[in-house]
Length: 402
Image (cartoon, rainbow, N blue to C red; front, side, top):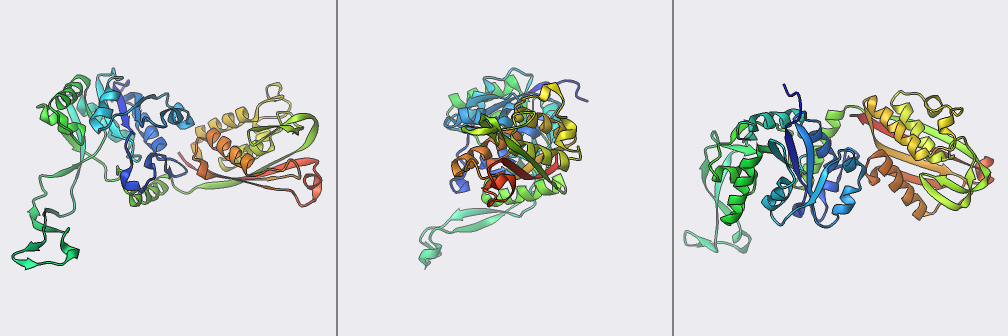
């Protein structure tokens, strides 16, 4: 049993995603959140891990550090190097724990149980998870322009031919996290650098340094996202793991008050009149909060935050929404999608304002911006909204189990 953390986890997230057709795989949405957010959540949930060290790309490092899902784990962020072992060395320089775990940022479906198993085994020196190879393995050779004296067509010039079949019973596929005592990994990486060797994983460097690496059972679902098809598989696995989603409709409306300084969707619009309300009157965020509470079975916004409470007088609705998110999280749910509709004849909400609202709401909820839709209607001259006397908002919110 693990009573207290004894490992630092280095998350390697500095790769170029060359096989993803120009897409940054670690920012790709998975179950409504960035892929890397899933990885951080999974590793941080392990009892053995006391600190996360994220090795990111040099470009965009500051932006990565500003993400709410990154800040939630109080992770240490550092730029990576040209090679994997350079990135690992950069993270290792910030580690201080007895054991260091190195995990691919592109393995979002690892379980806390596997992380802890590797960490415990690594206390003896070094350990990695291994899964059996189920495919038949072939040894190949590259062909030239002809074979056995026979000319072959241009379509075969770059093809490879089978030399033989490899016995697979003694083979296994390595996964991450890969763990080692900190001093052993540091010495192995230093040796690799001084001798000019480049290794594709930490175990190879440890093996070359004479360290015996323990193999423990990995997990078939702990896949590495390398190609677009891998992302589709991960999405299916996430959906199966999370179970059925819940959706609910939240709504709110407020009349315009006498003061200027509209707050809508978390965005301040100075030139428009402020909505009248006990808080700042942000009907859009109130609708989102109402939907979150309804979908998680926690009632509505009025029940959670009665209007008569002094602490909600003039309150920032973003702060109220953050409090709602914490309650939803405690209930075992998390948001994956929001569809917001705002109705009002004024002010005119163009694409720039709506995009700013999408960005703000996504940041508050800790989900990908692509998982927030925002649209506006003038109300077609109907009701108080159409007459320019009020604004109403509705939000369909979808939650899944944490």
